Image 1 (tube, rainbow, N blue to C red):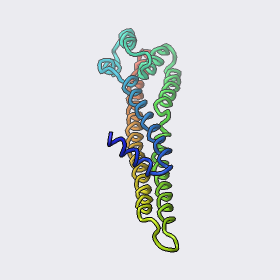
Image 2 (image 1 turned 180 degrees about the vertical axis):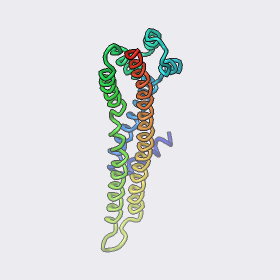
Image 3 (image 1 turned 30 degrees about the vertical axis):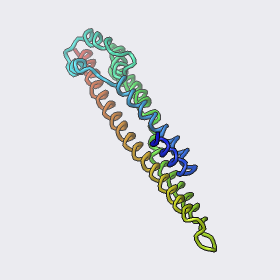
Image 4 (image 1 turned 45 degrees about the vertical axis):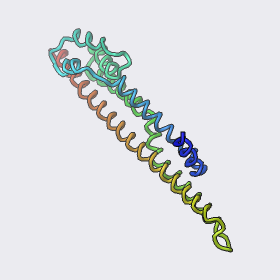
Length: 209
């Protein structure tokens, strides 16, 4: 209980900039949680299926049977199914459909990541605004007759430090989250492209044979 009271006191002491900073913190946390769930549920790929995709002599019936066992909302399932559904078309047609599907998946994976990137820049700036407001408040207490309220000066400096610290903490957390999920996105798309190329090569061999 005492910890909650102390946190609330620190929040109030931080000044008005604590509210937009708190909003940014909640927004960044929500986006990172959403991305964590998305990658956990929709970008997993069974190792056995990956091995089948790597092999050129796997019958299409086996591949489609294994694909049907996947979650229909899984991005790998959607991508590979587009290729399998168009396997009787010329391979350039298949490549075009696969590229379109890959673009849609990339858009889904990158959705709202720009907000994390924006938070990395906005949070320290808002913290700096809190710093300026706190220091202005401290200097206002120094009048023509000297120091009017020493305690007030201390409070103004504390307001500046709290807002700055919170802004930097939010920016750092958002930066790590943005870089982590950007890397996951790149790895997922690279893996999808590599295995998709194997399937298209399988179609080329079928058509040439």
